[in-house]
Length: 545
Image (cartoon, rainbow, N blue to C red; front, top):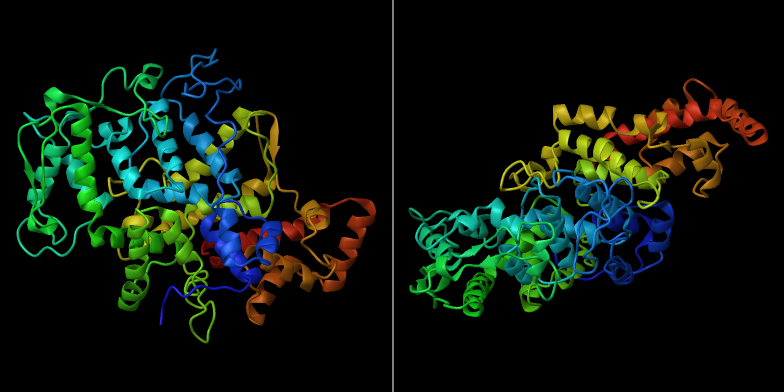
């Protein structure tokens, strides 16, 4: 039976690999071997130690600052970088790829919980992403309060148009339906068990007057109104547009709770926080978050046993800790359930059971094969081109246009029941996943004088991950443990070994490898190794994790 019983012994190779695949975008064999000697608690302590990004904000192609922040209010941009440029997205993707911790996998998870899209305002897009990252090791409840007044969110869901004389219910509806407690079974007209249409209407009244201004949306002037905790810009409270007279009374779904109106900025802010506290006091809100956490980090299928023995106690942990995400996530990722060690057959249900998102597909491939990339500050243009052309564009075409959600509900691979992650694997996307991943990196391409190219013979010879490259069987085995975790059954193994050898005998391969070592001419061995790497990356086993 599933439970949150904690795994206390060391991870070992397979479990360390499993944990890293689910929590980071950057995996190397060295990191797997290191984590293999640690317990889950020790590993998570490392993964949950976050560092600030370097540089702390995106740069233009000259390496100049383009977004003023409280820490660095003066920009050096001599190129007059336009707001529609997506440099913040490319910078974010670079940080996500380079960061060894779980910070950006959690940040991406928070984006799924509180979806907004990028617009033509690079500074607003940056502030939204930074607000998510700030809360990656903090409270979902605090994030819910701050995201409500985030300028990008105010515009995205039209709460900037929500006035007492003409209430706009768009944000209040999505806040309940998609961001927090979610719909339950519809038991009557306008009654979704967890909330009703009355609650949407009353919430919209609470949210009247939370809006933006010309200054708030301006790149420089937005710093005049920042949150004192995050140092990030926030919207304004328009007292004249707020419903300062009516008591907001909610349905029986919230126990008929009433919230008194605020009449000053401070009391209107308190009114908002009282509303959010009311929603977060409901057990169903905590359960909704834990179900989404489970599907993101563990698996798409939540059985009745998982609901009662994993989700319910996990929700208690989340709620008891004021919705701080890390205690609940620690309990989940330290559990025997996460490592599929609850029955006689270990690793048959959870490990390898999720389809990799396109972003994970690219980043895991690049990091496992240790693709060399420049430091961001050293060649900004080369980084932006890599992240835009090779990572984001292909991810977009494969169904995960991160920060450009397909609907207000997010992305099909994370939000469309019951298939969830299976939606990443379609006839159209599979063709792109096969044709536009490994081949280009093996052939090589240049951006701003930097050559991105996987030199597979040097990697095999010098990485230290291959115990006896001259042995075809050993080399194929080592590539399996690098890219697939486990060595498959003999028939599947021979299939890949035959691809690798390409008609050669194992003796021929040994001779070719010896020749490479003595002459440093890698032509023949590169053909064979590249053939194997392409086959392994394009295999169904690498499409899942």
